[in-house]
Image 1 (spheres, rainbow, N blue to C red):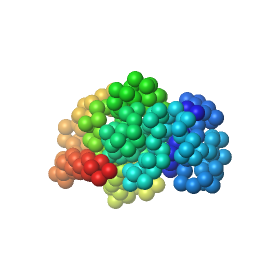
Image 2: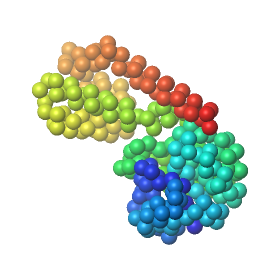
Image 3: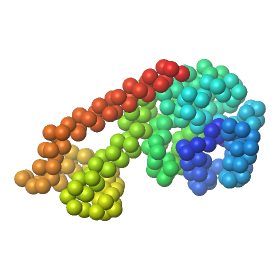
Image 4: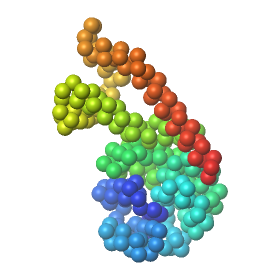
Length: 261
């Protein structure tokens, strides 16, 4: 069997659905292990994949660990097999910690974000030499490209990536909600304000694929116009520094989670 999922919560399901939709693997090449045999069987039937037990993982080529970091220590021993490759999406758990707990250096650390649920994730990946030589890292890149974009990143930057890109949907959602609230305050209906906020955020993201954000800002902000007055209010309120702090604090928390493992 090519791949087994250990844990099938929201993110695990999104990745599995992306893999199946892209036909990266066939259902018969995939297995799943959940908290008990009945739930495992139920999920396997939903997706047409194979229900497995922890002992079955010994004969699987690769295992995707989609657990909460706090759940990992309790199950690590029962899923550890030296001839298996592992891909983890657990925030803060380093490749060194994975290798120590699983008894192999065929480990890949991946960090997708919530947009995997709509196949628009930005995912960072890293792995030691052993994972690269065994093809685990290349396999993982292809795997996460089924749910968005995938990037190789040095592990020393992983906590910063988590604090920025993995957490970013929450930050941007907060900005969008506040933007819509501003529209409502000025008389726009809530429904329209939310639609407008979504549209402009999506369009701005697409523009940023071709233009630096500073260029976009300068093109919109004409001398003495409405936008420059709005930007001045944002600077006065410290929005820019607040986003700096958000990334910094989330990065620190990611490091702390890893230290606790």
